[in-house]
Image (tube, rainbow, N blue to C red; front, top):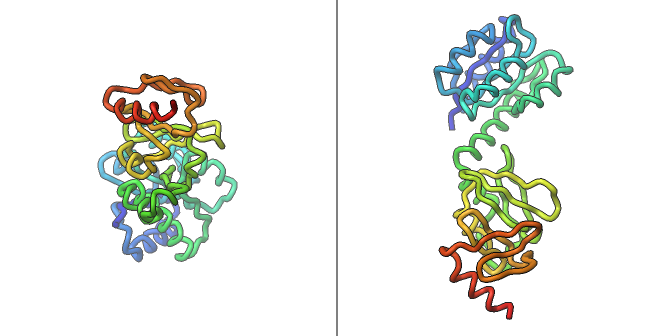
Length: 250
């Protein structure tokens, strides 16, 4: 995988070092180098950029402000930022704008490579989520399945099957509601993919937008289930399988 990147720094020597590191990295392709954020913003708008190596203290628009502009206008949705600065007091601000990493000057080529490896891991998950998850979830017998891995932001999160209450579809994402957390986990995957991973003796899809944990169902009719604090309708497409399960309760 080759990541398209640009470097922005108002200090010529610092910019030269970053450019040199980029050119030594086989997984990076340098699209441009800039001494100010305004010049960089034009390239970000016009070209497909994956990675932005960005100084923070700069004239006109500083690095934090540029990051906020990129986020506010959703310029190139998968563009990620690695801040490069000599001032560690900006670290918190950097993470507030969802920076992928924060390199403190002077940093070595080894430190630079660690940040690049983190970026590569993130983009592998974004571009090939199912392939990456399968690396961590080898096929095992259904009876032995105890957990699955789901992509959350740029990492894989291990989810215990017993912790899942139900799953709700949100277009390209799913919300996973769990016993151990008040807020659902939002993961970039499809309902079809999840349906294939989850053991059929423990989970059932009863609606285009819902998969439920069978042992978390509090009550049920032939047309709906009560699970957690919600009532979910069983749609016609999934009713035959659900009725067979429902009859097993009697």
